[in-house]
Image (spheres, protein in one colour):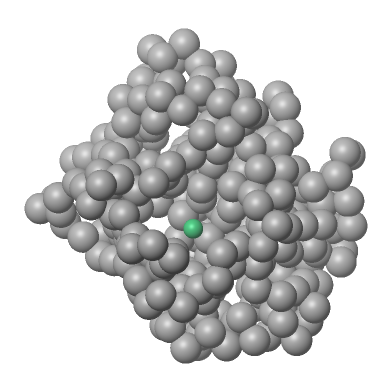
Length: 302
Ligand SMILES: [Fe+2]
């Protein structure tokens, strides 16, 4: 039994115009609404998770409220809770959840004040087959840390992630999953969200997603291209209220034999930013919005 999580289960965000954002995530981004209550919306992907995105009304503009990690069972939830308590972070006792999807888990504030949660036993879906052009799940979340070493150590020592690659300024973290990475960390002046990545079932779905977004008035801010570490294809966008989102596909599948490589290994030849050598540099807008969205302070309780 690995005392770690199985990846990012869901992301909760806050929007000034939640109704408009909900329409976008349904009609353009291709998630499916599963619950609605008091101005909040919950959406699933094609995978089994009850929901992968929740949108709540914002009080101060676009924000990220919480990341929830999936745990395999209650024993893992309890073991991770004990490690979070021992780390000195603010937390609550694991309990049955009354939110849509239910389950059992706990929330906590990590060393930089981000609201994180670990949950198991949600009321997941039986149908989980891929559907072209529709996201399966959250592939990874990329966070910016003001105290990068401290945040990286927390992921490794408390939540059980393994640092699997280090490319340029980015540190990639692998957990109890076959996905190359589920969390990516970089440095910034304040702890902000870099982006949330949604996994599509194949490369063509990723490319057509780029076209669908362009048609809807959301041009590609970086991509299309294929990353080095993780080997995934990518298109990055500014979603509603300039929330930074990615479509990705073909994420490298790994096992324990995968070998770590550092920045020297992952260096691109001059003028290149991806494996194919086709992506232009990211836009000025992408540079701005990938260090813009803050976590809602103090909302660690589930
Ligand atoms: Fe990404």
